[in-house]
Length: 137
Image (cartoon, rainbow, N blue to C red; front, side):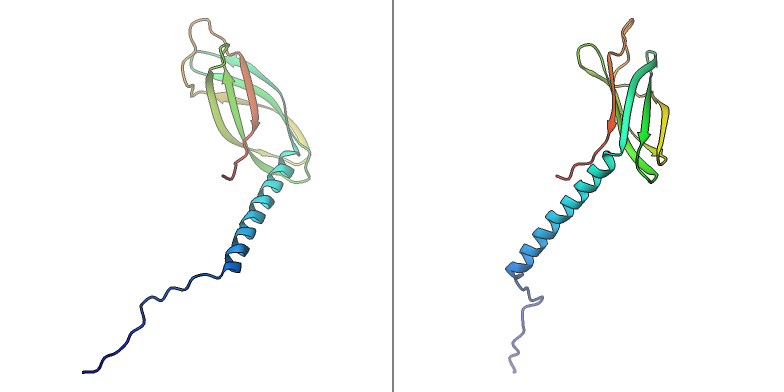
């Protein structure tokens, strides 16, 4: 009987050290490019005059001014938050908005899903709308 020597299947080769270094450098470069692009776009968007225009036991309506100073239309993600007097968050919402180039507009946002209902005689104390920026871990 013949003896046949076979190679182990699949044969695994250890990656070279310089390939690992190149991959790590490319990942770091990709994260840097993504963050600089987010910062560049965020500098062109201005949110101002955030106020609570109307509220009830189960809803809060926010009014704000949104301006785009860039040369292109953008779809941006915004996060709205509302707090009570003690600093407890009553409601928050993540939503996206289409903003035209070189424009300024007054907008409203209805928050109808509250973390808790407003108590009798309670008023929302503070509201904030800001750009939602994803963070790369």
